[in-house]
Image (tube, rainbow, N blue to C red; front, side, top):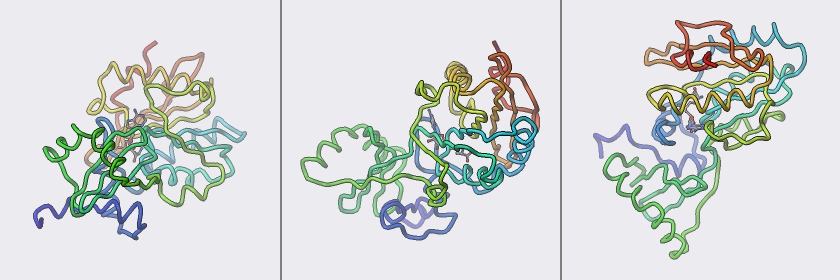
Length: 269
Ligand SMILES: C[S@@+](CC[C@H](N)C(=O)[O-])C[C@H]1O[C@@H](n2cnc3c(N)ncnc32)[C@H](O)[C@@H]1O
């Protein structure tokens, strides 16, 4: 197993036994949890520069308390950083949405299975090492049968969420599972600020899909709201665009490092 050392994850230790792992280990675990075409990869302080620019626009446009939505929060590490940057006083509610927040963990001898609440297999470990490619695909093909077997064998699961502990301590923070391609109506016309980082990338989703996400971003944002779309590239540079919703459409406020790759979709009618 030595050559697979970088696949040592121990999700049971991290999520259930709450072992204190170092930052690199935590980063590794999240970079291996797969949700559709994306991974839960996140890095501390990866968005400090765009957060400051966003803060300045918030100061400029809003004097009252605002509702903010961070979409695709992963562990919520970068959401917590945004919250600290903005200081509590500006925020009415900070919502963290992600398709995958709650998880179920089954342990059977040396195997650990990580599932979503709707029984999609997200990760499998053998002796604390993450199984990839053909081994994972094998388990993925029988994911529903496995769940059934666990039931018969009376193997119970542990339910938890993937959020960093600091987030739970924030009073005006709410989180829930939401799909950016199919958002609940109760959030329509609700947010003054929406941030989407490292999610709406062409490497993850087709143009067709991104157009659907734009439709929902338009629905959940209020008139005069601010929308930030960002992608952190391989060189840790943030490539972003900031928009404002005017007369129901998105207008460009500012490009950062050349502007978002999905800018044309955001600006289209
Ligand atoms: C690469 S992470 C980005 C984390 C964080 N925003 C950042 O920039 O550090 C992508 C996140 O998007 C979430 N995600 C994937 N598909 C989604 C969907 N359809 N709707 C909402 N969130 C989704 C994943 O679960 C994952 O947590």
